[in-house]
Length: 165
Length: 165
DNA sequence: ATTTTCTTTCAGAAATATTTGAAAGTTTAA
DNA sequence: TTAAACTTTCAAATATTTCTGAAAGAAAAT
Image (cartoon, rainbow over all chains, first blue to last red; front, side, top):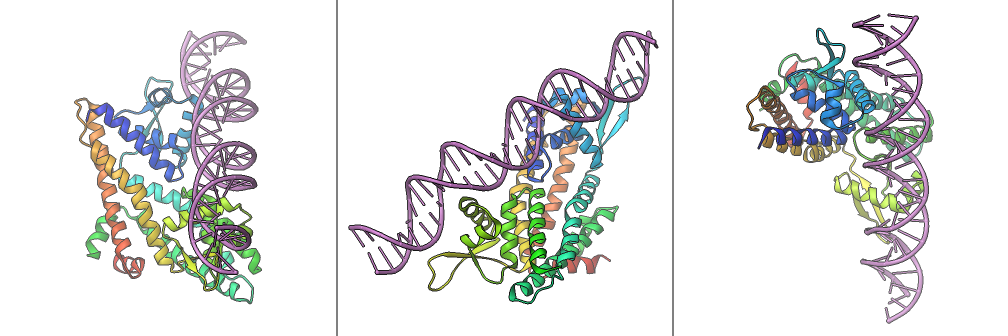
């Protein structure tokens, strides 16, 4: 497969993946683009390559910076701002895990903690307390694993795979 | 907190969580409802409790069955179909992991395998090959961990937590 | 101080996704 | 066979999300 065709395909696929992860398509595509770009790119470069508007570019670049996935780069002698992605993939995984934990797992743990002691006498209330307790326990375990992953500096997957066989 | 208030809050929260996971809100809410219901519920029960239409109910119940998260139950002497959720939370986690792996991780691994050997000579093509190779490697490791989780019958989290400290 | 270059914002337009409700389809019972 | 009870489908309506483009805002250069 030719490089340009492959790049196109990869960017489209990354965009799709983003959607099913609750991240918008353009944001994923910009990220994909910066990941494989040897040099930092400007807003205009990105607009041109992905055929998107200035507003859309700007908005999603900001979102990527909020996620800690890309950063601003100052190119000496240039007025424009350039952006580059962190290329360490393990680091990318950790960053994504950190953000998703914060945005999704933490809130649900908070809710479950609040509701799992609900007052009530019937079978309904009893079942509710049981299930929400189980959910809370599971969520808390997942949190521990994620924390471990997030804190790990070295290749965590390898460790697990080694120890668990 | 009173039981009814807690239940309401829990169902809303589960719906939110669903959205950010790329699952639609109603689907998550039906699941949440069945999870804490001591008896199986009929389509009508669900429509009434969540204030949604028949079509919406039907569609999302089917989706939940596709995911393997709920199942039909025949109540003796009743024409209606009833639905109940699997209440084993670890099992729920495994089922979700299985589906998401199939729908999200597997396709991206396929694409990365196809593109990471792209032909091309410049620095761009070289960088492309390097990054997509790293991504593929990461995705493959993640796949191994998920497979391990999916196959595990017992409490996998505990095992890891025990072995890794 | 004025102009030029670049960045940010945001109201409205466009695209997507979800939901409704009524009609068609199915199954069971009489 | 017919009717009643229930389930499924899907076109149209709604709601939500994303995107555009033009205008306003900032920063740097002249």
